[in-house]
Length: 246
Image 1 (cartoon, helix red, strand yellow):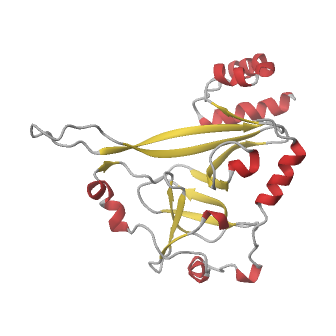
Image 2 (cartoon, rainbow, N blue to C red; image 1 turned 90 degrees about the vertical axis):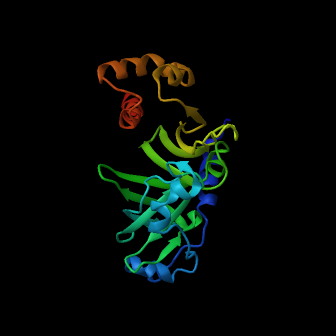
Image 3 (cartoon, rainbow, N blue to C red; image 1 turned 180 degrees about the horizontal axis):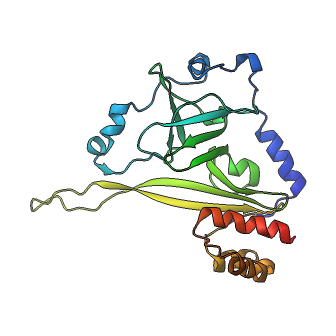
């Protein structure tokens, strides 16, 4: 779908036209989040998470990690991240839960979220809360979690991690034991080139079909820099290198 660049900017500004929190209204500490009227006091407890598979008869969970993880949140319209707290990202329903040292657990609505940082065992991941339909007229409706793999003057590359429940088929006779349903992972990648948004796959052949005029350049860059496009860092680097070639 073709979108004029100026029109995209208007969409973006309209999308961001949420009531901003005054600086004095922002919590000075993680515990101050409980004072925000839009935070709903609900969410999975530690016991819920530890027993999720047994209770729901599933393998895996809909969450980014299977436990609350240290992180920080950035409010819509604000420049800085909060102090440290524990976060839990639901990648099936696109929900964010926070847990404070006081024991408070609440849902932080994505319409008030700009970004969330998650500190994993190996990597720190940053997710932005974006509405693709409002910004580009493509993709899913509503705000969802996206990682920015590259943001430049020419290209914006987004990664959308998704979890979904695969139902297992079974025959309820002959003493057969039902196999648990299983949470599966799926990744979507989107590239905005200043005019249009495209969904791409993480392989050179498919990306070359989307950007045929850049096919030879991308092939050379992948070979010269030994890029593995199944690696998200390398996928982002490909578009960073394309920026340099422009």
